[in-house]
Image (cartoon, rainbow, N blue to C red; front, side):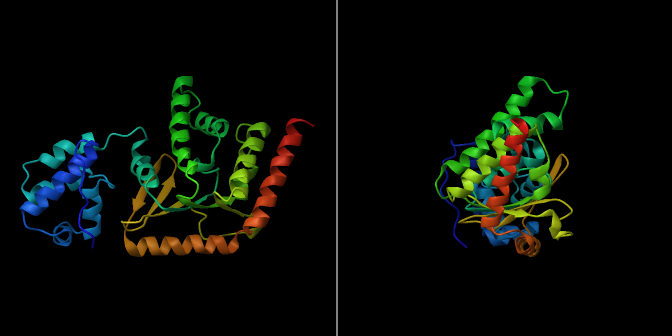
Length: 279
């Protein structure tokens, strides 16, 4: 396993906390694997905490303080390191998304966030909270568009999306919004910036009917999966579980249309929405 990276403690609270974890571990004469064994996690997970790529949650911080005899330091400071502009259930997933080299995702009911246009994101967020003030909606949309900037890099991350046909036919925001949203996906596909495949309605029952799935891979950390539900989500980093979920995604690909047929369907639906808006 590669050793911990040198960190700039001034870069962020999380980097500072990761550096302190490394120093505390080394003072106890423990390797990452040895500390992980005492806390019932993998050595690579300890490495991710030290590198600042994973959050130290309060319950885990308490155990670190016990094992490393740090007098409550990690518990006191983990809240500052956990500050995020995203909702709690999604914050860590969003941060990992920004570090991933490969993202594979399936969304059954909507266009995934990284492919959304501002108008589509606005319609979805308004549906999430019909009584929210307009400035709150715009704040949420702005945060989502910050995530979309990941695609400004010409090649990284590799983004492979399986779109459910139901999501493409659900008129979020109306025909004009949907036409723009689907044209945006088609443009990304034609520029080879994203691999998009559509899971057609006539595929019938499939392996991921219970919810959305996102798989993320990294250069220097084990892969993780993110499972999302209504106002909830959780990360999975157990290797056996992530392997099973990768198999789920592979099965989805087997049932999906090819990228070429998917692009043709997306563009046809975009044209239908345009005609519906301007008959």
